[in-house]
Length: 373
Image 1 (cartoon, rainbow, N blue to C red):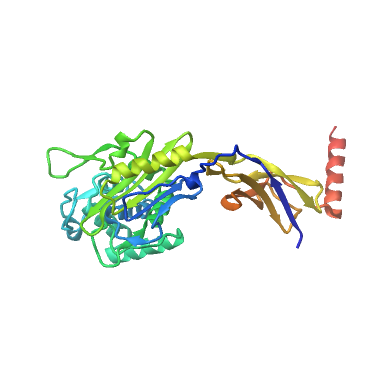
Image 2: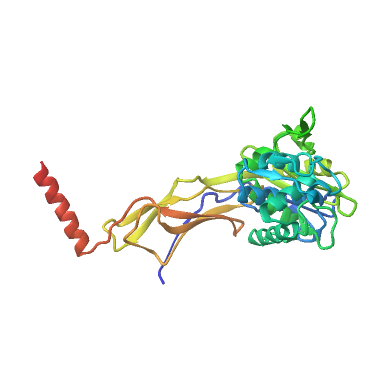
């Protein structure tokens, strides 16, 4: 099989630096911790990041993700007796009280209402048990090593996740515009049926007010899990996502991790969505080449002293006929020789086959134009 590979070395060497980011130590006072690049998912720092721990209310990130993937924001959600009676942090839903899904999500992500979590779970899947099964299936799809027993995160046997799993789930959730908007909201007001005043919800994630560029996150605490935090921030176009599990000084440690990440990494974005990456040779076509266009952006965090390159790959070659927008290959961003991000390459224009019918068709078109004039 013929293989066409175009390699573009976009960065040959960086200035020599004896203190590369890999050698700059970072230690976090947490049972498990991770820092990843939001664009590519690349792990920049890890500490027991693959070990499962109880994760308390950071569970609700997955609850919100499934709700947003399954429902519209204006759907009406009704609190059952089961939801109204769940212990722990609450938005004090009454039995039979209804809110929109969007209002429930504010109660879930800002106030961390366990009653909102159960109401959402029952609305989406019919029961907490069936919803937990969906949570586990979605985690598997995301390559996230997590096991969910409930939608709220109260301590339960087997309810646990790795720091890396939570980072991957949050990364997926942040690609949803509604989730990003809600998790980044500092304060919201939602109705309170039967009361003379509304519920005023304040986000428990203090980083939204104390850390410049903070974009979202979720707190969690139980006696079994300790303090847990998923968090994110953006600077100079680079967004970082972090997780700390079992971390007494959660906000301080999160800030240190973000500072470290922004000091030691920067974003490289060699391709944007719709940008022409290169020209690929076409076999059997009326045109000898076709432009290869990036389907999505290609970007990743790159550390001090790290080298990178972009490789364009067209397995089996590119053969006519081609339709504009047809997938013809891939572009892969390598950092230190390891794949970090990838996007499909699409044909930038139609290319007809070079055969008798195509030649005759072109001849007829030319004759038609000639006689039309």
